[in-house]
Image (cartoon, rainbow, N blue to C red; front, side):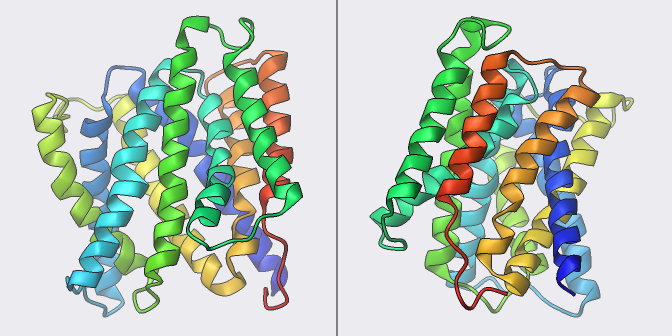
Amino acid sequence: MRWGYYVALLGMGAAWGLVFPITKIAVSTGYKPFGILVWQMVIGVFLMGTFTLLRGRKLVFSRKYLLLFAGIACLGAVVPNYFSYTATANLPGGIMPILIALVPLFSLPIALLFGYDKPALWRFVGVMMGGAAVILLIGPKASLPDPTKTGFVLLGSLASIAYAFEGIFMTWINEKRLDPFQILFGSSIVGLILSVPLALATGTFINPLVPWTAPEWAVLGSTIVNQIAYVGYIWLIGRTGPVFASQVAYLVTAFGVLGSMVILGERYSGYIWAALGLMLIGLFLVQPRRGKKEA
């Protein structure tokens, strides 16, 4: 039933949105991106591997699949998580959910460049509104609690660029023979292979044998929630199409900001609320219009 898809969309938006304030708890105590990423990949391998094997599927490492797994691992985890976690450690928890709304705004010019989309005036206006939202975040001195942290807003925006390239990459590779569990299983293995040397080289490896407190549970919780939401997102695209599924971006931003207020006790200036409003309007304008074949 159609209402079931809306419930799934709401659940994914809430789950992904709450990942941001939970991650803020993990990075605020000194844990670094690559160290966190290692254990996220370990948990991803365990969870997705278990689901894959229980469903009687297997993982095939052909050249094409390796390219798929490496692309998702790099553009969907290693690169954006480094920028996102670094920015989150230095910014209020509600800022990154606003910046994540830049993903479809960045996706449009990239898609135009590669010939996957056609230009439209209202979508160009949406991109401009997204740019105006970023200016509101970094321009006025009253926008952030610490004006010296404005550079981290731009750093966080690089995570959105990586996610935008991930979407274009998945469109280009167009792999439909693997299910979401297999895709995330393979990308988690590749991500683990990449992240362990990075964590060791930077001295940021996290020892899991220490007594667990809030940061350790935050790493575990955010990873499980993120994996489940990611599987649901890929499933929803297959059932309803990318246009309907892409609406989750609104919910991720909204739940991320509200979750940061409730969980972290954050309060924001009028500039941040104005940036949020502009970002959501820009997101609405950039979204592709529903096609005739859309469910």
